[in-house]
Length: 233
Image (cartoon, rainbow, N blue to C red):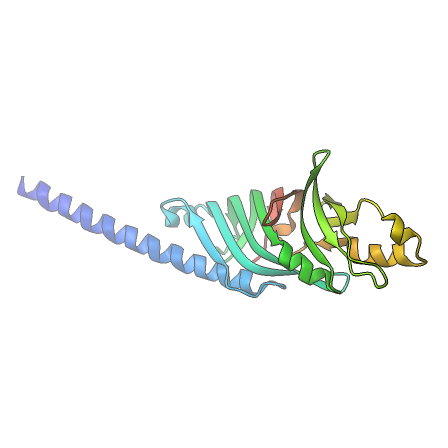
């Protein structure tokens, strides 16, 4: 009976040591992955990386991780000479394969991502005194309200449709041109120069394809996904 008690105590001790070692290893791996993401172009804050599943060490031994999640703030997307800031970006990678030397991630069987962009950041990106705000929906399509800055015209608003095109770009385009603008030479081209933009979001980890964009009173949300996603670092 005494020997059994000693054995049970040893099992508990070594079990606790294994768990502690497992957590230390996963924390080091998460920190390394965060450093890799931090070096990506357009990222200005330290990402938070979480490796799911237990035990971690047995996953590493099989060179396959159940799930790796990443959360990033303030990611910069540049297009047409303007910078659009993604307020928050979160990504989830499933069935993640490690390289043969165990030092980095090679691929993921599937992945999803969500990017949040505020209207304030869209307004800053538009520049020139143009303001972008919530526009609701029209015929099931998300809309934004655009307040352009056209000299010689009093302030007015136009609605614009916002959608995903080519799987990598969020496009905003005014639905129509007011009659008072059409009456002025060059007004339409100037207006569309302020209202029509395409933001290429190529900073998504693994070059995921954009699925759709939705609007809320606070901003827009863009979702993306992919299968057999190739990753590096």
